[in-house]
Image (cartoon, rainbow, N blue to C red; front, top):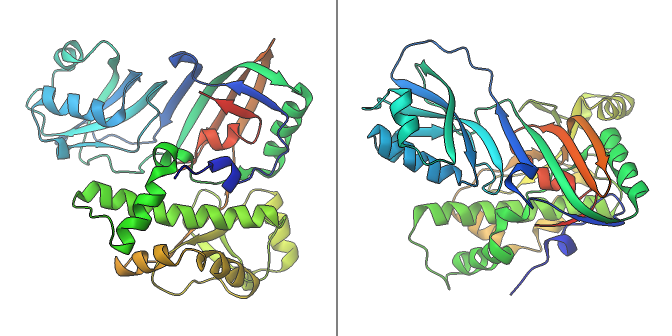
Length: 344
């Protein structure tokens, strides 16, 4: 059964235009920024790699083969878009081949090492400061003024921190797979697929909570019982720890963000109106709730808002160039869909 992402998870902006992304690899450029004070020695060779039209995990396998190490000894912070030009760090533990020129010459033409250093630690998942994006949207049709207005709204309010459609597989197919697996009608032996389906279930409940807050007009307004996260931090606090005026001001200043539940077995730390809303939404997905409890997933919190730093745009006739930075775990397509409808 096909599921429509846009129908399930509404935007907060009114959309009156459409365009195309990723017409060419150079239309979508992602640069990973990680502030690391390299030791200059150690057993981990860090490689800053530019890849074109290449899958991140595939690049890791190429480095594993060339450096003659098991795949598990190659680390990277996160997956980057395939149909794009992306730059990101990889680390290789105890490489048997460590000469940069030899590694570069053995890599496919679409992969190039542009910097390197030795370090005493492996690069871990999520270990990056932010990603910078330069995106060209082509062949835009519709109301250009609405596009400009939507960009200004994103600057003022941020945008919803939905998990993107890629989280749910082709045509959102992982949602049904997760339901069938949790209900026992679909057997899964592969460890990676199990992890993927668990993430699908949690992400689906989270997105549904965000969608409900957008429908109620409270996605960027606090309600009683909310839990807040400091911008750029994992630290959080309850609404009872600050006055309503303080919370309102800090939300407007992008100092804090409202959070929603990443569902799990333990009791939510939210309460009052926020807790009622979250439990009402989660109760619609009993199979997911039971499955996440069975696998002992601990309930966590995730910000429901993204902040796009240094957001700028420039028109070139019917094409629009965007430049902005996002923190790890945020989706560039989540920003684009708040500006216009897009196709790839």
